[in-house]
Length: 357
Length: 258
Ligand SMILES: Nc1ncnc2c1ncn2[C@@H]1O[C@H](COP(=O)(O)OP(=O)(O)OP(=O)(O)O)[C@@H](O)[C@H]1O
Ligand SMILES: [Mg+2]
Image (cartoon, rainbow over all chains, first blue to last red; front, side, top):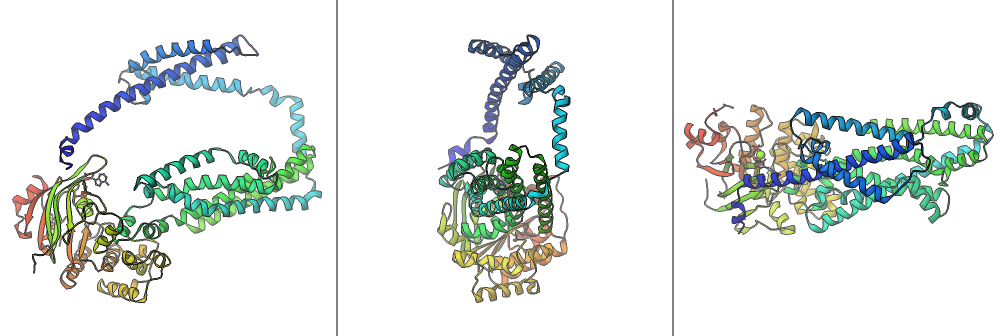
């Protein structure tokens, strides 16, 4: 019944596919070129001409101008790309083998890089004057001086706060394990490609996890401190959420890179899906999972400190309070304690990870 | 001692991989009960694909595979797992669970007969463990039962794999180049275990092999594949110089291994 389809010569099929692919690639290359040209004209005009040459404070903005630039870029990009001497065609592997094509792509790439660097410089308002002004140096001096003459009067409170931070990180890491395990199996491609339902679950979960992961723990902490109130609980949930999303990705990648042989062997005995996972998959991923989790605890201690700054509790919150009151000697003690704890955590987690491998 | 009972019936089998590779192009063959069928052919000729279509690790694209008269070409789920329990498979890379001990690796051969929960808890009934020990005896490595599988040598690992497949009490044993990563002496001893399983336990064997000397010594019948098609079917001693060149190409020369 499938005979006729098999009759199409595979080589013919591949050839046709290749030609189609080339057309699509050329379109992509031209779009890239248009974007590159558009980008460089914009940077040239707005950052360099307006800002440096005319030294304008407020940059004028008009949609008609943007559209005009886009139009010009479209023309240049299309011609350039179609001649196959452009950067876009080079990137897509379609450019001619001539010297001119090579040179034109390389010079343009360099120009783009330099324009970007200059624009970046202007945007961040890099100023050596600020860095070395006497006023600035005085401020820095004050802080450094305070850091080296810490106020030990708040040691008890700081110790308590930093323990809170460590526990917060630990609880977030531990609570993340069960959901992460479940999610990692559901987002491992090699386990979920069997049928449409499994694949849709895989796909949807991937999107959700990517989204959650792309939001920094700091932002999650802000969200949850509004949701459940400022304090360690909000910080813990923020870390938990981000840990689940981040580790589910690492775990599922570990699952995807297992040896397929044992899976075949266990499947061949007539074992069902759960048995295959338990016997052929799990033994191969236990170590990487443990290692990721311990490493994550270490990361979470550092993150918990930062999260404290926005009200996630623990040592970070305390740091924020004393900094707000400009009590630099207290801040000094807290900073030193954080450094020591982070260093110890780093050391311990590295040692544990070494030991299990 | 070849009986005429057909165990596996493959009819006009095609396999096209998603990548577009046409690995099997209309293969038809019978596997008879009790025989030691050897499949030979160059790398990429489709030997592994053929075996995997028989125990359905791969699903054929067209054609049919029958096992004990039942069409298994497209069966799924429980039905497929039941068929698989009757077909053992041994691989070139042994494919043991490295971090488990030998006994548990062998017990894994019983998974198809077990309920999910007890098997995951490692709750194998005593008679299973007895049977596992007996199978380790058959391949002569009982004393390694509690060693970790990856501590064993290649030859020993392959014996564990054979013991694992024997746990299935298989009617058919598929072996995909089982000695290709072993030295000549070990290869011969492993092949002798297959012979023992075939002759003494009466398990039908289909085995992919590379070396003709092993083929002549152990096969009761030979099939040669070339780019997905059967080009030879006959007795081992019928493969003469001319056939050899036809199967392996003009430049090929036979290498001896004893
Ligand atoms: N999972 C797969 N996906 C795509 N193509 C495959 C897959 N497995 C095998 N092939 C291709 O199918 C063809 C036949 O492969 P097969 O493994 O059956 O050959 P073989 O005779 O076992 O070779 P070898 O002696 O190297 O093991 C090869 O061209 C191979 O590249
Ligand atoms: Mg093979």
